[in-house]
Length: 170
Image (cartoon, rainbow, N blue to C red):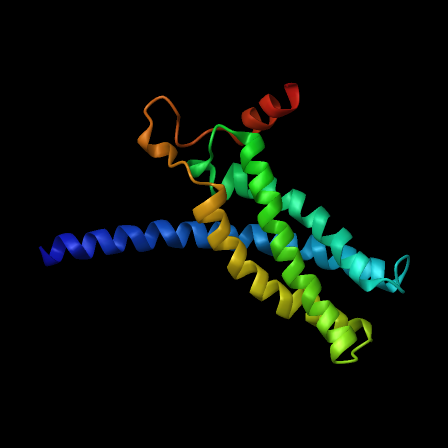
């Protein structure tokens, strides 16, 4: 009985660890996209509008994140309802973006921080950590909810390129 319990815990840990690692890799790339766009915008075209710059950068990173999480991180949990999944994903990301933008707003308007580095740290370090924790659990428990491994007619591993081609052909 102890051996059986140990195996179940080990299996659960390994499954969760793979999702966390993939989620982290996608998040790392999304962080680079978000940070690069945010820094470019607040250092140039939107230097007087840091909150709007955070939203623009977040939207671009979110679209990358949806594709990568749907077709790689949680591909075994994708539902067949792409529209439902996308709407929930965007809603959860809007909450995450609100967390990040709120951190920028607090830094700028409450704490009086106005330099590029202070605003960047508030939005893309502190805000991102808080939003990432929220997003992982939101994706796992509300967005990507169908466990495809339990369906014999739905392959657990599908070719992301074929899925992307299917989406664009509709």
